[in-house]
Length: 364
Image 1: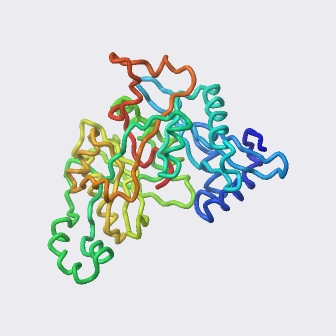
Image 2: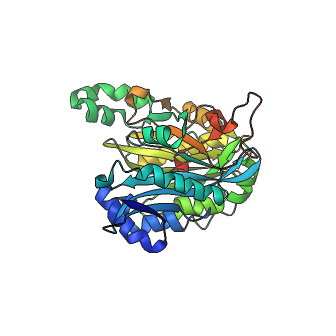
Image 3: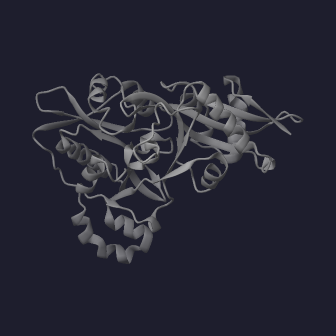
């Protein structure tokens, strides 16, 4: 038998012990990373329910969400991102996942959160839909661009065929396509003064978009432990006004050296500035010996069109390392914000209303 209790910061060590048992040593079980994720988020502290075995006293599972601020249909609202869910194997089948989740959703609704969303892995995906009432909004396309074709072919097909790939190296060579109208420059934690003005200008670019102000970028990309991101901004010549930014990370994906575009947003009046940002980040990836560039970006966005004009292609679903579904669940009485459209449907259920990138979840 188990009981549900609200997480307190003093519970962190034993949750780490349980997480290491489940995931091993990784960022998801690192003390500093979890303190950053659970306690330092500018949108608020994590909301967590724990299951404790009433006889042994050990933790049996956890359900975790973190608050995420959104601009949705011209209003500032709070949603929550589901992550780090687990149940100790010996407690499977006792309803811990469902029981903790429903308790967390009630806690969130009482605190004013309007919805919960997530990017579940294939193992947890069925439970969210069948047991917790989530809706699958659709898949976020994975966009890929070769940077070193011969290296990719060598790793997948061997050295002989790699020699035949040199024409593709020439085709996919990253060239300097700078535009004299714009200046791309690295952004640092001490140089985010223009971000709030930029966010104020673009916050209504898409109907539903996560808040991307200076506080959020500082927390998400500069204060985060265990990860290094490259962040570029772009401005016009002879101007200090920020027109867009892009965030990248060098990592390994499916045994390939991959430069991932984690976040990318540009002023709609300056799409050429966005292309300059992409080109600068691609050249950074090449300089760091990345073989492949990738990004998750919804097809209806201007940023997706810019990526495709820069050589990115939509990865066929059969070749994706895993699908990237977006799931959504309304919390509490939210009809004031999640107002019905003309056809009686909740507009939050339409993925083409959203702007989502890898920066809106925690894996990359």
